[in-house]
Length: 444
Figure 1 (cartoon, rainbow, N blue to C red):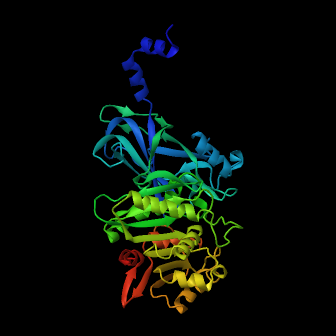
Figure 2: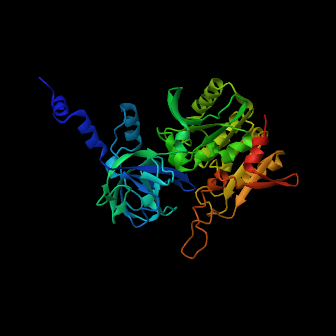
Figure 3: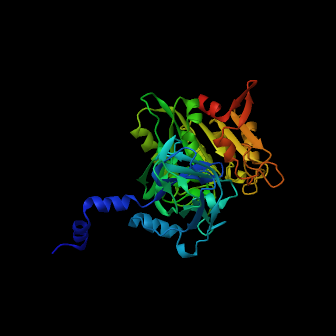
């Protein structure tokens, strides 16, 4: 007996069914990473017919989005990890706006990848984004697990006025079917995992193109980016920036390794942030394994850095493996100075270090963390220790302002923004040097 699917296929004909399916209008979202994290600044809509440039404007469509916690549909291993981190998915609160209309700021005819063209069957709708506009965010911070997770962003694009196509008109179009998401900077990384000492660490990595000898940059994420999805550390805090040509050029190309803690790097053997980490040995084994697999990594130029929770782990790594790293760049580091012994200082002072922090950081107050540690290193005779200490953390792009017109001010703990944008500068030997320029010059 013929199956129902086969019977339907024979009754309508292969060509007819394929044609009917292709007429269903679709959209694709584009996810980018900005100073505050991931955002969806544009959407690519399949119009179904070719139109000429100028045929649409910002009033042609209305864009509505609904943000919700996705159902877990991954494999068992990933599902178990997710449930461990988020045991009550139903109770997860979406921070900020859950749904609403997004402001379209620009519209143009494009190809399937979103590039502007003189004629095509797609259009791009650019939408307003910003650090305080949650409707544009595909991430949500779960206050129970203290982790960022992806949210489901379901869009409905509704046509408001007719569009003159090259042949006929387009009217009454409603697009609510997603054809996927484009993540250019995130997907420049590879995602994998490694098991060491009974602990699985997921990680993201970037490989430069070429066969020369390249340095390795290791970045350790903050508290909110743990889990089993290494795209989160890349997307939530702009760590994709290390693969950006603007930073890669300082190193002549560089490998980038972004490991992910299953929970928090600061999970100690006795208590949280006790000066130990139950992931330290596994992390070091992962680093060594990665270096061994990539023969053209220059082992004299391995750099390690991290923010907050990851800055804590950075400090542990240069304390316990003082001869391995060519330099370190801990940011708003969370290893309390009282947990650092004089012996630890003697070990750390041999590694070139560039600290970054802001005076307005209330999460890890500099007076209890980085400032006394930095001073002790200098007193101990550290020869290459730099410090970028900012008054606050604010937007320096000119794109985002507060209501009074002054630059948007971020949480003072977010000093990693200055690191990613290479805005940390120090005067060395009478010359101003940026963090990335300094880092690239360090060798073990």
